Image (cartoon, rainbow, N blue to C red):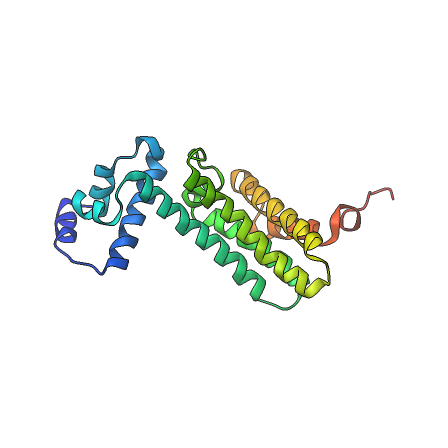
Amino acid sequence: MTEMTRVQQRGVRLPRTERRAQLLAAAQRVFAENGYHAAAMDEIAEVAGVSKPVLYQHFPGKLDLYIALLESHVDELVKRVQTALDSTTENRQRVPATVGAFFDFVSNDAGAFRMVFESDLRGEPAVQEAVDRATSASVDAITETITADAGLDEDKARLLAVGLVGMSQVSARFWLAHHQSMSREEAVALTANLAWRGIGGGFPLKDA
């Protein structure tokens, strides 16, 4: 961003929602590059092209800004999962769609998924609460669908939902780190097949 662009941005009054989105985008860039502890509000304001007073009008401090950004990423993940569940009435298709939601979230923005799944601020109660919501809200959505469509009681449905969420997010993160030899589609299909059919049914012993 050139100095002229920053000066021009500082002279533009944006609606509050647009300004907030601009500040969050700048914060994402700075947190991703420097980590939370090394990130400075001065730099975030500079990247956003605003003065520090404008930044502080929206976010009283760096932790408030971090939590707001984290919450926006959690909202995005939960929305992706709910959209996947609503995309079809066929459970056989719902499983790969839901697994794919985690793969898409992880691959869409590495900084976002690291804040949600690998935050180094879990000692902060508000951060831990947001991180926990990423799992609990996804589990709740899947549990509701399984309970309604599969005829299982809620406890059994929730256990399956926890397994699917855990499998999906761990597999997606592993794939992102080692995906050079495997496409997203293949990785999703393998994970979904395991979730849908189970190890015994989906992957019998070769000599069996």
